[in-house]
Image (cartoon, rainbow, N blue to C red; front, side, top):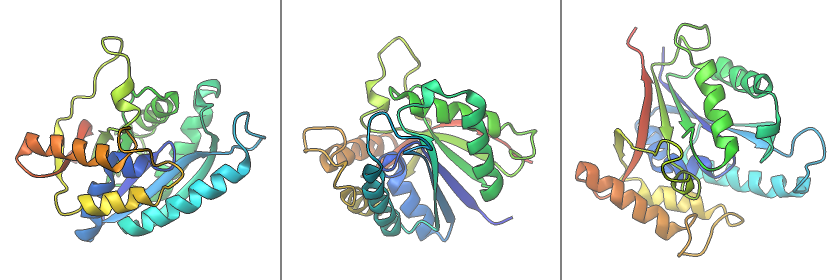
Length: 228
């Protein structure tokens, strides 16, 4: 079976913030990478944002993923910022359909205790779908959680487990590609003193790099590894 990485992004830009450098590195190593952005406007009128918002951000997402070299980009329509009001089975079924379609070797998910509840819902659904004894879980060798600036770092301390990475990927050669991809998200990019900024991305990458003695890295939490 050929290697495929599936990145589950609750929202467009999570894939870049969380692991844009790793995506670019995998692509450079001739690995297949699929990104699935699983929320959007939803089937009904969204309570917060007009449909035009997603037309813009999805165009930016396509540009960002093209910069990173993503092989396939998938969009789904779970209602953004509303997943805490949906039955778990509805979210699980969307994630199961994606995983069954892609059959990934590695599955990358948001950290389950991020501040944004959409992230937790997607992480939970992925845990259900990726159970290693199930049909959909059989192709998956590793499941890893990435950290998302503006979400992972804002969870209330001592009230939920902190993000403590135990897997690090050297992205010294691809950090500039990650920055370029983030710059495609002009509607989401923030000033340099805020978390969704190029300055914050470089700073976090440099910090994670110090854990393994390189100039830039991304950190992950290994959720499961299965040697069959």
